[in-house]
Length: 220
Image (cartoon, rainbow, N blue to C red; front, side, top):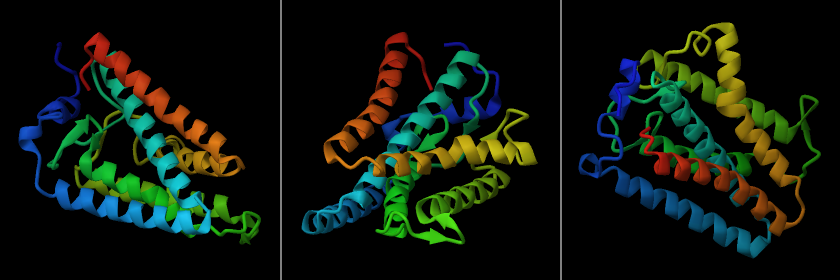
């Protein structure tokens, strides 16, 4: 494998998926995610309302896809990904994806699902509540990412993907907001079977992309 041009990308590849470097923090985080999902599944089975679980799975699937295409960019350019996480981590899974981010996004969709109203037509300041909270959480994520970038934990290298006005809009739209748009669209599907098919398609695309990368020997 030829070296990547970006030092941040190269640093993020150091110890990539190296289980010998895994930290013990993974265990309690995993237990916490399991506990939260089991609790929400039990509630859903009693109420028959699976919206929270649907949001959790949908949002994480979108993040999985996002991190996959970001890895593809790193390999295809042999230079740099849109974002990298070269700093300390309990386990780095892709150049821009570590286990801490994974657990966070596994929970983030549940938070969104718990926040929105059961009344899909309810409005906040004249905006449908699902879109209002989608916008709000996406903005919140961008703010957090900016602080992570300032701290050097999450790096950007492309000149159009930065803290400029235009760059922040790109991060908002293609980094986070479409996660919540996907949740809203899947929630609009009435049939649970069709919801699962839609969620399966999201994961399926990401999985196929990673299988292709594995067959071609891509390393990201």
